[in-house]
Length: 400
Ligand code: SR1
Ligand code: MG
Image (tube, rainbow, N blue to C red; front, side, top):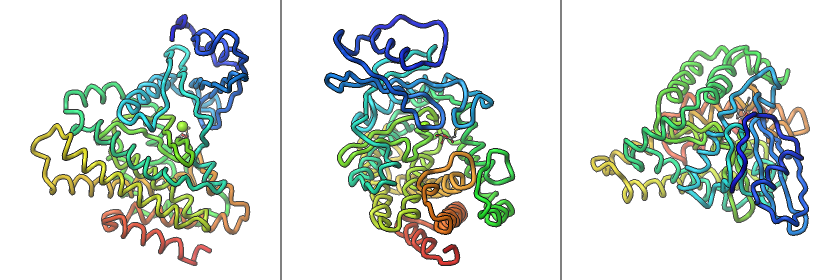
């Protein structure tokens, strides 16, 4: 697609988005175009442009120079649009079934033009409305195995891997995660948001020295372990789904970090449904098990067939690597559970529970489970032990 390069950034209106779509010759000259801004995330504008005659559509995503969730007082780099587009292209080469196609990017406008996925729904919204998306865990397990293996030293080789590490240096977006996930929920920071009914629980959490020590270890891992190219924000609001398709969107937080971070975010965001949705508890527990089983089996296959390192092809080192990823993922899942309950940027799974007593009970269970996953991650040595601990915490009537 061709397009006249812009020299200045300006936030798009719906008209400007249509003009860009026309200039890219994506639609035929007789197209009857309509455009709606549909962005419901924390950071960006998202325009959905459709030809009313045949419903053929396009998405134009534009970064704003500040965090939309807070406002203009929180400036944010526009470079994240390039990181996101580059990550979509990299992940799209590795796992094309699970990533939207990128048609055009403009670094000055901070714009990415991509495949219209409006036939799918945001997985979190679908789950809250009772959808189960039977294949989503299979798809996410495969997506995680492929993106994690093929961006690691083992799948890429050390030279190509270092080039990608350099390409995905993403300090400002990493700082958001470092603050909002690993730091601010553990003291009385301005960014925290929680219900009055949780005050005693939050005070106890702030005084838990062992918890803070373990979170420091996890934060150090996030800061220093450049294992694989991460999506970096892989919650269920970053996944589009239907009963047959799954697409992972929004990788603007992409950077080289510990593999367990993406896996842990997937676990945690499925756990929100396990906790908040008692009628569908078992299917979501099964989703968690399947994510791990498919990840482990596909990663194991890639490890033995595609490995660029000769000496690591031993069962002992593979098992060590999988055990490390699993332990890390439980710790990171615990951090995600806690920050989405008392930090900035909550999840609708919990906040949409109308009855205050039920909602507070669910949030207490989330905090309890988060603390246990962080502090006991070394003892939760496999998925069966992890799941039985989840069930134990959920059944605990002290929080009901
Ligand atoms: C200021 S950004 C808040 C949160 O929204 C994003 O989706 C990330 O999860 C981030 O932590
Ligand atoms: Mg996002």
